[in-house]
Image 1 (cartoon, helix red, strand yellow):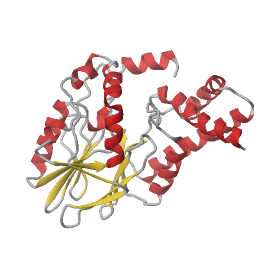
Image 2 (cartoon, rainbow, N blue to C red; image 1 turned 30 degrees about the vertical axis):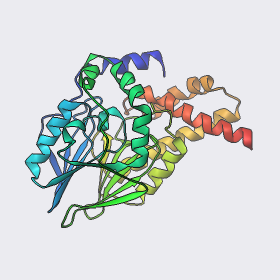
Image 3 (cartoon, rainbow, N blue to C red; image 1 turned 90 degrees about the vertical axis):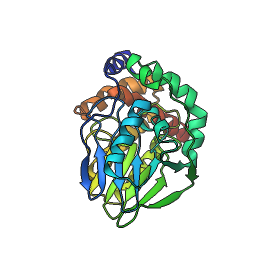
Image 4 (cartoon, rainbow, N blue to C red; image 1 turned 180 degrees about the horizontal axis):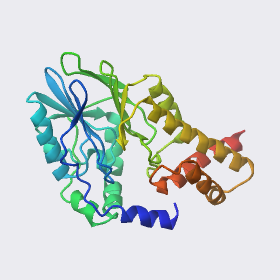
Length: 304
């Protein structure tokens, strides 16, 4: 990433990453979303209310967000609650503490293993992004889930509200998506952003797997896609992210074929990618995508 991009990104993080106080919107019967308000490091959060139980999807970062979200959930349902988290990154799951003892916490085993492995490193990394972020991380502890699963898991909230959780590692080792087949609503976490460059801070992000996952998710044909960050959309935002990643891979493949080293590939490709997706935000992540694809394509060239 360029030093200018890094400076601009850090400068955008002066606002505390708090879920907005705006009331949730109902995007399908019993399916509510607290939108991110375009605030950096605030995710879109879901609350699903079935006949017999409720489900919360992601928490934001820190105890304040967790308390705020738990209160919102309780305004919508007095039934038993489950909390699930799309991946371990701080702004998605590190507000879980207020839910401990007040909800069943459930997500995939790979995510828990990754949380154990990377908790301290990511706490330090996010804390270094400035006082607004560091303040929300104060007092945050690693919260263990009550249950984990491998592969897929179905939650019956009662009535028409069946929820399918499934592992889709790509952005991290432990990504999961949340699919409501009856309502045709898909929560993707950071596998998809709307008009933001896909986020590549994690060493385990894998571009080829990402493309495959998005191809599989497109086949679901959801009516509503709730991205990790950015405005809600439809299947088209899955397609846009996949096409971006495929384009970056193709350009990296060409750069490797011409003998470019990684730094040369980043220097040549970054401006081209910025121009092609000029209306997308957070170009800080472009070089990360180039680097991940470069590793794979370079290895392929050596083995071929």
